[in-house]
Length: 147
Length: 142
Image 1 (tube, each protein chain N blue to C red):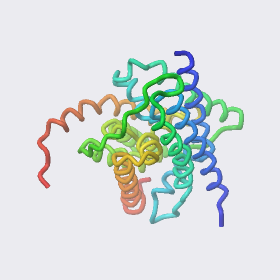
Image 2 (tube, helix red, strand yellow):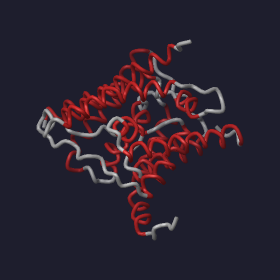
Image 3 (cartoon, rainbow over the protein chains, first blue to last red):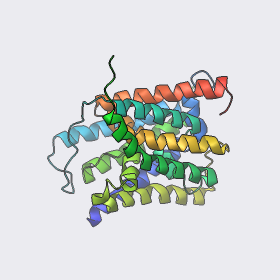
Image 4 (cartoon, rainbow over the protein chains, first blue to last red):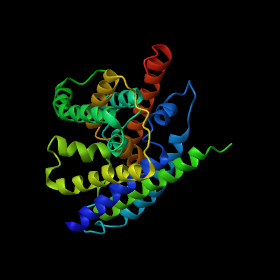
């Protein structure tokens, strides 16, 4: 238990430091990446590429193991289910991401220096997270669209 | 020409990937920022709340400490209160509906070639790009 929490803290610390160094806590870099028709900034592609590389190796190692090093269950194979929640949710997320230039990781990593605006964003994000399960129930209940 | 920001992006990206790799191989968990905090907010992650809180403590406190020691980082977040609130709500609702954000679907999903992760990433990139066209170039709001 202690070890799990210790490695969780380390992972969070490394994640946050990576977000700082890569410039992903700077909303102008994120919006610059999304602004294809403006002064386009490709930095985010380097960040995503750099992050995917070690993680792809980690997934390969994980498939050869039955449990994590600390004895936890490993994640089950990814679901193939493409549903309305996934696509609508991702579109809504992308809209908010573009508007402010913040996604959940950097929003939390910048809490210590992001000022009142950063705090307000985080409070609104948490409120949205509270509302999401209600919305998801409605989505699941609605009849499937005929395409 | 190579922009120094790209090198910093690559280096920081590698750290993000190593963090995700460690969380997977040590703790057996997918490192998704929205899921880790969202499970605490809606109560679905009560069974491993201590692990989630430990992760968030590292994520919030270490960058705060680095910023304090190095003289701070600038987020350049908009001062427009309405934009901040609407964006925050959209990010919160959207990531929980989609069960993931840039770290979960983007980093952890694409790296295992998850169809859900790839489609989610395409959807939020496209939506973000269209928002820039609409709200920056057409309306001039952001």
